[in-house]
Every structure is written in C-alpha cells, then in structure tokens.
Length: 548
Image (cartoon, rainbow, N blue to C red; front, side, top):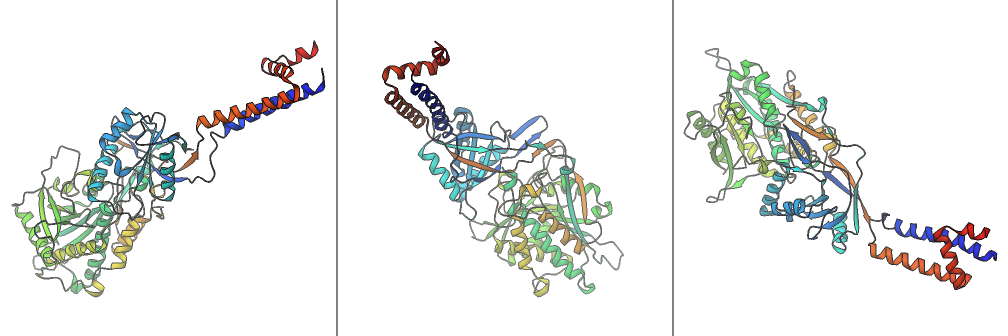
C-alpha cells in the first residue's frame, strides 16, 4: 500500500474531530461584546413552616420573551409593566419557566399611577408566596435594551448565566441584631406644682422592604419619616438649648428598627425604655411616608391622613387633631382621620402607632397613604420623594409641636433663620436614604443600590445626629424574631449574556465541513480507496488491514 493513503487518513481523522468540536463549541461560547447585566435577586425567607420567596439562585438557561409559547427550561424576560397576576401564573405553572428576569424602569423614568399600582400589587403577591425558580430584577438601560432586542429576534438564541459562588445562607446571629436610636430633650414641666414634664414623642421606623433586598431603598417609606424626625430633632434641640426657649413638655425623638417586621423595634422600645418615660408620654406622633401628599378631590389641596386606633369623637384624639388641623390649615393642607381598630391578640401590626395603642398610649400616624395596605409601603419602586412637599410636611409637624410645647396659637415666627428647616441637611439625608437598601437583616453593604456607598452609612448618620443631641442612652440593640429566617449573601449579582447559534446553523456547518473533507479525501485517494479509508476510520480496523 502506498504511503499516501496512510498519511491522508491521520490528518483526515484529526481534522474531522477538530471541525466537529469547534463547530459545537461555538454554540456555547459567549460573545465577548455582549454586555453583562447588574441584577438583583428576589428575596428568600422562611416564616414559621412556610418557605417563601425565590428558592433558587444559580442560573444558566436560554432567554425567551414573555410571548413565547414554550418557556420550559428557559428564562422569561419581561418588563415590569407587563407583569400581572395572570401572567405570573402563566409563566410559573402553564409554561413552567426555569427562571424570570424582570426589567424595572430606569432611574428617573416616569411611571403612571395605574402601572405603579399594578406593579405594587404583583410585587406584594410575589413576596407572599414560594417561587420555585430563580427571579432577578434589573434596571432598563442600554444593556437591557440590547438584551430585549436579542431575545425578540430569536427566542432561545441568548443564554443568561448567573454563577453563584456561594449559595444563599440563613442570616446568622450577628445579622439578627437591629437598633433603635433616640434623642431626649428635657422640658421645664410645671414650675408651680413641681410636676414632671409630660413627654411628646416623634417616631419613625428606619428599615425598608421590597421584592429585592438590594433595591429596597424605601425613599418615602420610610426615608422621608427618618429625615423628618432627624430634622425636627435638630430644630427643637436648637430651641431647647436656650433656657429662654425651653418648652414645658419634654420631647423624645425615636427612630426604630424592624418596622417592616410588625414594628418589632417599637415594641422593644416600649418594653425596655425607662418606665418613667413611657408613663409620662402625653401623645406620640409617628411619621410614615410623608414624602408626598394625596390631593383632596374637592379642594384640590394636599391631603394627608391621620391614622388612629381611636374613633374620631374620642376626646384625646380630638385634642391632637385640633393642633394638627390648625397647623395644616395655615399651610393649605387638608387632614383626614382614618380609624382602624386593633386586635391586641393579633401579632400583625399595620401601623407604628398601634404598638403604642396596645400600651394605652395616645398615638397616631401621619402618612400620605389612606390605608395600611402593605404594597403601598413596600416596593422597589419607592425610590424618590417630593422634596418640596416633604419640607412642607416637616414644617406642618414642627408648627403643630410648637403649639403644644410652647402653648402658642401661632408659632409660625419661631422657625426662621437658624431655627428653621436646614434644607441642605434634609435633602442630603433623603438622597442618602434613597441610595441604600435597608431591608433587615440584610447587610447594608450587600444591599446598596443606585450607587449607594453601603457599609451602613444611613444608620451611621442617624446615630451621629442622635448622639449630637443626646449623648447618653441614644442607642438600643435588640434581636429579631427568629421565626422569620432571611437568606443573605446573594442580593446582587452579575448576569452574563451569551449569544447562542441556532442548532440548525451548527448542523448545516457540520455537514458542510464533512462534505468538504470528504471531497478532499476522494481527490487525494480516489473513490475506492477513500471509501476503504472511511471504513477503516469508523470501524477501527486500520491497523489490522495494514498487518494483512
């Protein structure tokens, strides 16, 4: 046998194997020019015996649009505005998708009230159930637009990959710690009778909640309440620092942790604070989501709601409303009382003032929301506040408090110049709150969003301000209820986007390569010898034929 056929067989076999490997390798190789996405994982937690939230984190599946008829073992890519309860059921149970990527509006984009309400309902429903697939969220932008276009062009031609180096784990004991902060201003009391000064408390919670911990910045609920309490504390601290400006009432400003967890921080504050302070509480004003206002349909004026556990005709509530209404009227704002009874045996707490009401302390919550519905105050879309309206609402509260502590009919002249609202401080703190996730028990560094600095900077600022005002006993630390177990270490991730050639293309390419190699073999060996070579290659009889 001539050496040519033997020499031809080896390169042919090598070329054949290499060609097939290269061809099929190209089907899974990512295109380096395809961008990656910053994504945020849906929360995962256990409550009692229930497993809730997204139960998986790792992802490596082709992407399909929400209109695809078959989404099995695929990631459905959908815009938040198109997601409805019916669509969720279709994705999870009818199409049995392997993953879900939700595209949120880009920061600064305007969302209509109707779309926002629809999304908040969907978001709340997702958080309240077990989701057996990985769910991620990302912001709309250039990269997201490229992804959507690629998915629409060819369903299944784009591969989405999230490699989790560390699986989500339950928050340890250290992360189950939360904090309350307070600042106390001593009043003069009744000089003639020597009676200790009664206390007015201004309270707000510090944490936030939403579908993705890394995006739950809670700018309005309750970044606006935090900012208002800090601003009011600074304003009255300036006044009370002068003996001539010290009011009869003492004042305490409290920022509580775990508000989204049935106001556990408020409950701890009531049980651990000096009973002499709790017993002297005259009334408590809680602030929740005051970074905006509704509009009264008849007067077209701004409208805020005063939520109370007492009926409107109750004497103690009437006293509080008289003061609040006087200040609101002076600023052209309307107030409406919303009465909601509380069930002391029910562990669920809708508003912060209810924790005080359970202890028979007169308390109300001021909010722009008419109901306690959770979806109104727990959303990843809660990213901005109306700063002008917030300033107006802070001024309203300041004037109302001044009417009581200074026994004034018209306190508008007090808060001017150095005693007025520090606008740069107020707006800077709101911006800070809107840049960092504060969902407990997730670490702030893991939950930062929108370019936030992380590292607990919001609470560090809170502690610094409270310490300036009241250096002693300004901080309480308590442990969260272990009945709720949250999973951490997976809030933010990078999603790699790979282009995948269609299978038909690869089959055609493989056939073309094989045909070309066969043509070369026939040209080199002739038809009969080529057939013999092919037979030896595939049957493994080359060596036996040579020996014969």
